[in-house]
Image 1: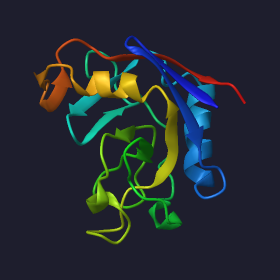
Image 2 (image 1 turned 90 degrees about the vertical axis):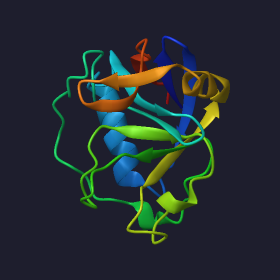
Image 3 (image 1 turned 45 degrees about the horizontal axis):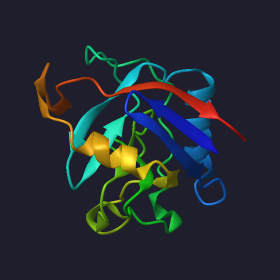
Image 4 (image 1 turned 45 degrees about the vertical axis):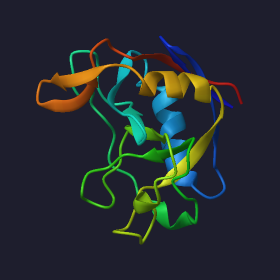
Length: 161
């Protein structure tokens, strides 16, 4: 079990090691390296998703390891409460950033519009915390949209396995 500790409460996460081994291990390694400590959920869009894991409260990007292979073809769907790897328009570009789906986002699934976004885990407890984060006021900051006006900080990610 993984615990994402935030300034809004804890989110417990189960990783899908068997169907998304590259993405799950990637997330674990960033957690082991304390990469997620003091990063923020920098993109919060109600009824869509919350995204974090790559920026600090000043909207500075943290250095990452090399991008990983996109595992979106693993059969998992972007359903409410699942975690997926964030990426650019390049299929195999995911590094540390991830998002938690606030609803079923079928258009993010493999093959629905493009290669898709790799689902690699799900929230097992703390969806109320995720929903609370989704309700924070947002605005623009340093060229980014949908940024919480008061930082939603990931204080640490704990591996309890």
